[in-house]
Image 1 (cartoon, chains in turn yellow, purple):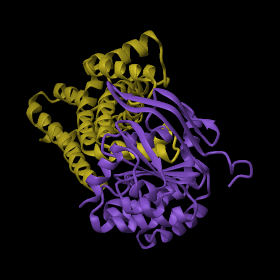
Image 2 (spheres, helix red, strand yellow):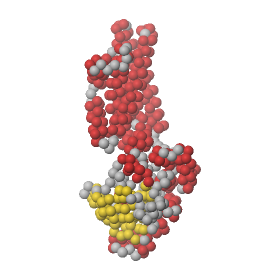
Image 3 (cartoon, chains in turn purple, cyan):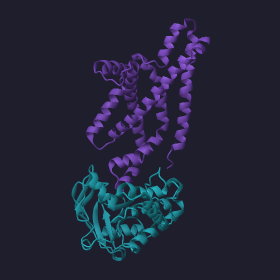
Image 4 (cartoon, rainbow over the protein chains, first blue to last red):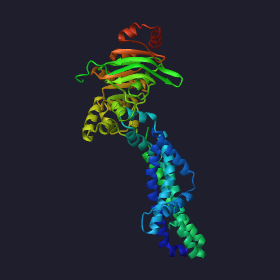
Length: 222
Length: 251
């Protein structure tokens, strides 16, 4: 217990990084996932094919591989650089990996949501002269998103936990910090472990409650 | 009315054919609709009347023949098709009001997003139209809070908000409780009297008698008979129409 109290500054810093990773990746995954979902329902076969291929490839690749590819492939081989600071650079590379991976799941959740919107809604939108993009943006997606708030919450919880894989390319989030602390406090492995596990619950449980509440509040009444 | 357009027909369907798989739902349809005319399409279910109605604003594509609207062939897709649809109002059997928008937003969305009308102006006009169909007091509610008859009147207001050259009604009263049918028909009769061009697919024979300029009777994907309502209902010329009328008018 003493180890947790002594190291609380380091631990809080690590979780603050976890939170930032989650929020940044979550936002980018929502944007990319929405675009992918739009591609998958578009009238253009090329866009549909690209969307489908992306989802099938990325969703079925282990996240560790995606993250390592971003760190080594993009970072070292292709020399993609966001910052002169090495740690900031790997932070952004891991955000890319996490968002690219999570976007595939967001896309499928939104696509399921689109299927819950009655055909008549899109027909009525077309009948007043909205274009395909306006129809999607103003009528179909707002209703689809409202119907998948709860599944999106699940994805966000999974993402929160998935950020630990950024440790694979040396991003100092919670799990990497935990490992470091194990080495410094060999006598307190179990308390440290439970401390970190509880801290993750503190992040994910309220997320679940918030999204359940939101999904009820935002539901479209038909 | 446009200066040059009065005499030219608004909609011309020529040799229109459509299949749903092996089902031949529209067979060699030829139909001309003049400006200001109210055409009621009746017939047994599965006769293709809804498909005909939906083909006019290309919610259904056709396999053969041509449809022209206001002198122009229907565009296949894209902006030109969207523009055509903005000039043709449509009222659906299941209302299809935008479930996540208020009543007023339902009526102003098209003018604002399609026509580029300023919000304040669109709302003023929207309220005017809602008052006209008797829904003014419900403007800030959501569709699910209204009765079927009220929703359908909003749907008519939504169509009118685009200042359409015509309105298509696809069985507008079929999904309504009986006591709500009249309030919707009243609005439609008023529209007809004001000179709106209308194509109405319906089973409401009373409306057809009262408001139609012409009745088109369809069966098995074909136009079997067309005539003025009085003649059609009192002296149908074809066996098929006699048979249909005997079944619906005796009870």
